[in-house]
Length: 463
Image (cartoon, rainbow, N blue to C red; front, side, top):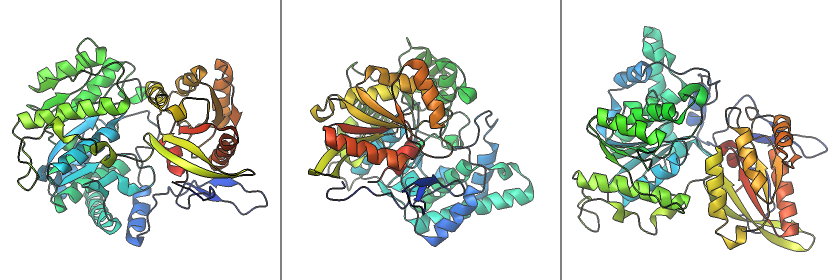
């Protein structure tokens, strides 16, 4: 919360203030911001950033096997074999689902690691132990070990020589979990599932949160094809959990894969009017119940010694599982001529239309957020900009089109799409200036502000 403070640029954001008469901001194109302070980690990340970054490169192709990550794993002594795991994929909701499982198993007395992506404010968000980001010095150590494995593979000209940024970060996370004595790792797939770097874990539970059209140039142009890729995380004899029924195209594909793998299929019933948080809790609860049925008990030092299950999700669990940029709420104090006014702000990186609709539906349940609002939106090149902008045709929103990073869509391109669908809008390429303007106008009019469309945009908004 920023009570009593003026809104100023975040010094660790992807933007920096230019020295000029007018306050303006320019995009940094040469070095991504990871928000780190440790010199060793900064150096290692600098080397890592020079590798091909799968998250930011054109998505016109996909790896053909997991040989690369397996090579790195072998060179590090197969760290993924030292803990049990729950693997999570889906179009949206993966990170929140992972965080809720982490909080629940921590409550049961286990030492829990979580690997997720992308990060919003600090790269440490990608590797946590018992809900806390790993120490920067320790992250530097495991990343250096992973880079050593990569360098060795390159000298030997083996499969690991083609490692990407995500490959190295993934195997470093697994090495971290081994060194830290993690008992359960909650692993979020980066893209798809079947050929994702994370799919070397032999997971007890595979969770597929949902399936919608996204990354179609890589995963396929139908929900069934995308579901096939995501269902690739289901392991033989494991449990597959998804709210998608066999009457659904994607759900049917998942059911077939579970049958092929001899995996139990659990389909929790989700009420039509369930909020995003309620939906996540039902899916996680089903996964926890499945673990309990398979003989996983609380640790003996836990308050009660009983089978794990959905009972672990109490009123405190959602608070323990909160993540930046996912339905994140702030009360921002804004200075006006009439004094300091408090503006409600919601930051959510919803970047697919169905999720943005769900976010807005949930927010309307809050009386403070029921009225008209200001929206700040940036969209990545591989996202459905037309679909996202079309959602706002149904809303009483004053929309500003902006650009989170140089990799985001040009606001002029977004403006052309907005014109085509008849959506009123304004342009401000500088996201921090756009945010300040939205806050000022919201303070003057008694409205609220929504920052959405991109987790990168969520990451540069000052807290």
